[in-house]
Structures are given as structure tokens and as C-alpha cells.
Image 1 (cartoon, rainbow, N blue to C red):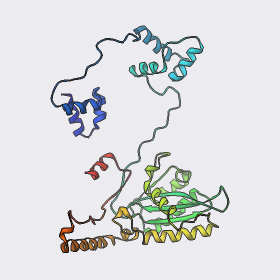
Image 2 (image 1 turned 120 degrees about the vertical axis):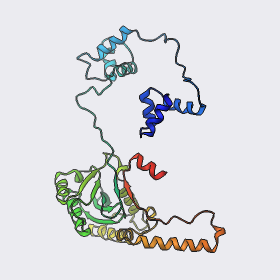
Image 3 (image 1 turned 180 degrees about the vertical axis):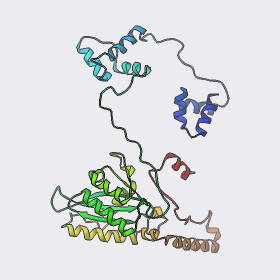
Length: 339
């Protein structure tokens, strides 16, 4: 009956581990039951109480001390040493935690609550200029400890760099000018795109967010300190800085940095065959030319297989266009693509 209830919950979309915990069962126990086949509940709990078990009065005393006015805002790690300073020992910190948990009192006990950040919402792009992502990276300058700042915007569907600027400093004003110029160059309309970014000062500045609202651009943010929430632009920065022609020495001037980035953007957009896009250039995919390119490649492979079928143990290479690109996909989306 237990296994049937858990299977029903999993089929409805619940995670098996969570369903097991709700019913009071360990996930590994369920796996062992399924492996052993049919049969009853083979769990064997302790038949006798441990000799060192706390008495009911002792447990009640721990709860009273933990909820006393002088202790109710402190964690057990703070309570136990304070009691020791007073010449009193009731139980260890772990025992305090266990008893508080059993009585539903294991909560943050200080007035300031810890910050919680949920995973960013899933953003999917099935054509250009639906979802953009942007970030800022450092470029070394001649002055030690000072940098030039590359502000860069890319389209996640085509991976095309749709806008970039290099400045002496990072600021919300530069960021706003960059996004506005990119929208103008791409002919973006109101409520057309979503822009994903991290939680840096320029991204969260009120003037920058006001500009996005004025342009009709929906803002999306990464979790603080989580670079995986903005992977596309992070991967692009790695491609930039691992290019063979990337200078070993700092850029001599701001103009030198801008000239190099201009050459890189031209190469990346028009010559770089992107591995996650079936090896077409970002510009070709952005313009829709990738469909014809991939169709020709498929035809070439089919002709080669027709000439020498004995050399092909499987079907030809997959040259189908990548239909949709997802940023921060949900677990369900990852499972669907894996299937």
C-alpha cells in the first residue's frame, strides 16, 4: 500500500524522495523493497528503549530552558555554553536540536531572518530577440588594480552578440545606454524581450530598472553568488579570454581594448561555428540562414551514406536545427530533453 501511494504521487509529479519523507519512509528503503519484490514491511526498529534516553521531565526541562526569555532568541549552540558558564548541563547541542525539532520549534530564533532566494524563472526562446542576457567582465588596464569594463549583451537563441561597450568604469548609465542601443539596432518592440542578468550594482540600480520598464523589457535576475544562473554569457566570456590572440599583457589603452573587442565580436558573430547550435555561426542563426545550411549538410551526409552504406552503422549525423533554447530550465524540462 505504501509503495502504491508513493508511485501514485510520483506519477502526479512529486519527487520520490519528498514523497517518501512525507510518509515517514527512507528513499533507500523503498528502493530495497522494489528490488526484493513482493512482501511485507521488513523494517525492524529497536525493540527496547535505549538506557540513556532522557526522561519526560528532562525533555520538558530542555524545552522550558530553550524558550525562557533569556534564551528564546538564541540557538542551542549559544544556549549550551551559557548554561555551562552557570554550572548547569542539561544536554548536548544535538539533543537540544533534536527535541526542538520533534516539537516543531526548530526555527530561526533571531529577529533577522536569513535571506532566501528562489531559482530564477525558466526563460525559453524559439526565435531571435525573445530572451537576452548580459553581464560585465574585467579587462586588464596598464594601471595595476584598475580595469576596463566590457558590457556585453547576447541573444540566447542565436548566441549572437547584439551589443557591447567598453568603459573605464561599470555603471547603470552605461548599462542603460547599451540596452537602449541594442533594442534600437535590433528593432525590438515593447514587451518583446526578457533580459536576464545577475545581481550586480548596475543591474539592480533604480535608474536602470526604470529604463527597462520604459523600454518594455522584462527583467530577470540570477540568485546572488550563483554564476550557473547566467551560463550563456559566462561561457562567452571564457571563449573571449581563451582565444589564442587574447593579449598576455594588459591593454595599453581604452581604445586598444575597444579595437580588440570589436575584432572578437566580428569573428564570434560571423566566423565562429557554435557547437551548441549544430556548428553554425551566431549571425547565420540570428538571420535564419542556418536552416538552409543544415539542410545542405544533411543532404551531403545522406549522399555519402548512399555511396558507402557499409561504412554507416547508424543513421547519419543529426543536422536538425535546435528549435528552442532554455535558460534556467526546470527539472521537468531537463527530464523531457533527456528523454
